[in-house]
Amino acid sequence: MAERPSIGDLRAAARRARAAESGSDVVRQLRPRTLGLIRTRGPIWLQLRRADRDGRLIWHGPGSYAMLRRPADRAVEGSGRLLRVLDRHWNLAIMVGEFLIFLVVACVLVAIRRTIGPTWTWLGLELVELLLLLAVVADQVVALLALAGRGLRALGRPRPRVDQVAAEQAPFEQWTMALCHHIGRPEQGHALLADVARRLTALGGADVALACPRDGITTRDMRARVAAWADDLDTGRPDPELSLRAPRQLPARSHRVTETGAFFFLWLGGVAAMAFAMATSVAGWERGACASPCAGRPVTFPAALEWVGHRLIWQYPDGLTAETFWSRSTGLIAGVFLPMTIAMAVVCLVFYLRYRRKLTGEYRRAIDEALRPRRLLLVVATPVERAAVLAQARRHGDAEAVLEFSEGHPVYRLGLIGGVDVLLAQVGMGITSPVSAAYSVPRLIDEWHPSHVIMVGICFGLHEERQRLGDVIVGRQLRVINVRAGETEDRDRGDVVTAGHQLVERFAVAEPPPGVRVWPGVLLSWDVLVDSSALREVLKARYPDAEGGEMEGAAVYASSVREGVSWIVVKGICDWAHNKTSNAQGLAATNAATLVLNLVAARAFAAPKARQNPSQTTQP
Image 1 (cartoon, one colour):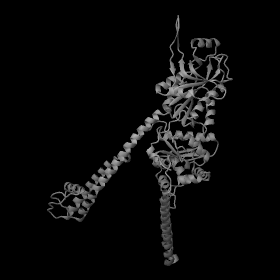
Image 2 (image 1 turned 180 degrees about the horizontal axis):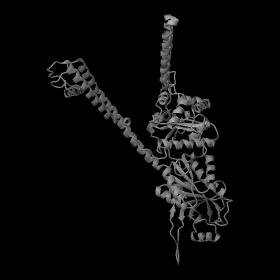
Image 3 (image 1 turned 45 degrees about the vertical axis):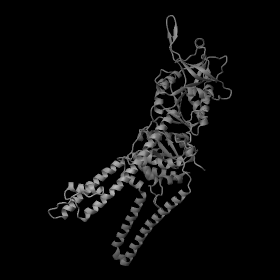
Image 4 (image 1 turned 120 degrees about the horizontal axis):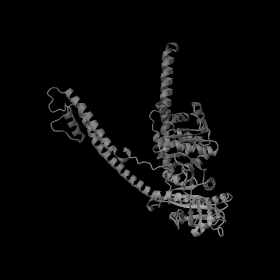
């Protein structure tokens, strides 16, 4: 990680972003012209400086950095207020600067009027004033023309796509990676995105999403890498205008006042405060205008409040009359609040009904998502198994795997394969060590909330007469070996469990690699490294229906069942439980990983598409 950048570094970084292949898109994204000739936001280096002060800049150097932005670019307590004003109101700052230049020049001309004479002083002042007016008028004319042009283009624009709407709305509602620039080796780009994920968790927590606008990324390679890294917004397009990285945890539902319609009560509070202020003013005006006695006039605060309250509902109180012009005008103004309150009540009711419909829709989507497999966790136990899965993921995925250490267990994010977010984690061998699957898998499930867990790797075979090295065993059932050894008999106390039915159904139709046979059946799981022909014969005699054995499946089964997650064990045969060597481990791991990843790529675990309501079908 590079040290904190200087202003010179930030200027160099901004120049590199502008000079990149998509630099013009980045400039339009970060510095739009919304109100005329002058850009609304400050220079890129100034935005980077502000982000660095707020801790939102992930800096690996001028050629590799990313800038995060809070929802609606909210201010942070303690951050530089001047930087924020300059950044967000650059056009106003320029206009104020032009006016200050006009004042300075005018003062100079007045100071030297005796030297240049009154005529030249007057001409100079008129010229400077004319230039200032021309700048203001030109800015406003361009703003009006741009507004008219946008309106005309909107008339012929087709219905906006999901990613286009999201690109416009997300910066106001979500954390945003406003700028991402990387030119260098791919692994350095993966490291930058991993640091972005860690910084987002540190700043916003584990329950925030990250929106990644395409136009904020400076190169095509990095756009493709970010699209694969943040792929939770299903737009059906290979190059979406916005990618979304979903939160690690389910965010808490926020109920904003403007969203629920509850601002009606704020309105009522404002009307009440206005009525109190009006009553205070009316009492003062009437008291100052009348001579004693002032019977029948609202000269006290309670009487004035009663009079204003009646005027709010278009009534006159009995026995009270305001005589001054200002009081009667205040009464007319008070009468305006009644129709405004009625209109506000209608608007708030509409907002509330929309809010209720939105909550209902979110509930239904949450139920649908709970029933749909969207995230798949692959678990391996050895470096050979991990390398095999990563190699197959590169064959099917659009980007390199990204290793994350943000919290808990290290995880490889393999990207979107077959419509599902695929994760890979390596655990320790066996089930008793502190890094074994028994301890790691529960944490992984709690952190990532996968719908399915698949143990992929190598095992030993029990039927050398019909099986071959490299064949794959799909454990439809898992028999956990836990033998009670007694004086007169040995008794099995381990579980015999069936894998998740959806996974069993999917692997029943999985296509194996050419020349590889798949053996679905019972797989033994024992926390013992079996390397004895005699012990193997005992296992074959005791469990005649078993196809092979391994060491970690029992922990995966126990952890997944407790969390209600579907699980299965798929492993390739690398030896025959005696005279062990590593010669066939790579072949066995590759065949098992190929079988699993081919099935994933065939969309066996993708969420089913929602059925379209015929009444909502749009005509071309």
